[in-house]
Length: 160
Length: 308
Ligand code: FES
Ligand SMILES: [Fe+2]
Image (cartoon, each protein chain N blue to C red):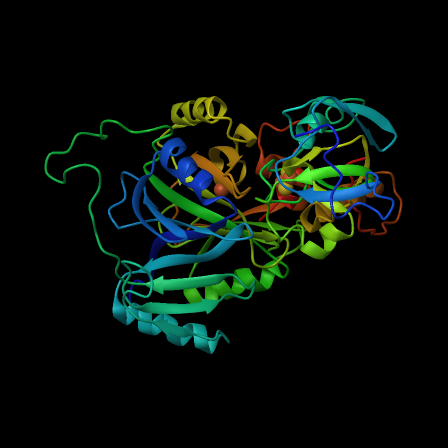
């Protein structure tokens, strides 16, 4: 893979590197690149998937929980929105969690992806019915304990 | 009716990488590869005697294609067919051989949209041990060397309805359930059985048609640790464990196959009988219910939301 792999048909009219793009294939950058995620700067190293970068440098630190997800392209827990840059995604992922249209709109799975250029990404929030019930009930109990009324608010599960 | 459903017979799952999944179930789990036809591979565990218990099929997505439960007799099959129809299920009859090595049976969707098949016969090939004066285990097991599959856990948008349907239409018994609070009688999750284990199938809230995991039985806690060694050695993606379940009292490691389908190695629990009093968990105690050692309460979220 050359250091300028992004010159392809899907490049913008200018003929330069596309500012934002998701390629399908095994490509990756030849040297470390910058990954900016939710206001933090990480460094991806050749040979690792993007979810490995996130697990090593983002999750499980500064108060964040550990990453939970299959790392095998099946569950969608690692879904990111590409804000800037180019990534290549391996084709062996489940279309149940990333339909073609969604991919074309700029979303991809970190566990199947490697960057081609510096990238900027953010997480896609997901819902979890079971966990919402659990969290709501805990809050109700807490409120009952301090003598307040109880309201219910579904919550989005966020990686932030 | 007679004795009805006997046990979980097969789990038919999809993969986005058939070769990788084949290596996983054969070399890591130690299953026997029984047949390979075009886009699917058939496996059985060493202590199972029917032709296969896991079918893996190439697809553009992960997840559960269907599950098969084995029924005692053809009279039972007819009776269950009637019950399923009485409870609004659209039943299709399938003929012998339509499922490789499986006899005739019925296919229908349960309220959560999962496809279930009931059948009476599958070609018996025997265990990997003789049935006359056998040793306790066969030589040359690979990897984990799981003796059999045990259960599966699915998600449902209307879990209460699905749970009640499985109990009414298919005579499943309830071992344990989760309710919203101590005054509620409405199960939002349940562990159901037809065999003598605390669950052959379990249902939790989540999207329809999805599988949370299916499990392999191992003989004891020591085997769970050995399985963990095998997973790490083979870079299998471990999810949670080793842990202890409050619900079912099982011991466990959760991990993923190469398509992201969650598997489990499971041991322990108790013997369940149809007349046992149902065990109830309130939703606020779920952290201990799901992972009894999880005092940090940090695993519930991703563990319950990630399904295929
Ligand atoms: S972690 Fe499951 S799809 Fe990436
Ligand atoms: Fe399980």
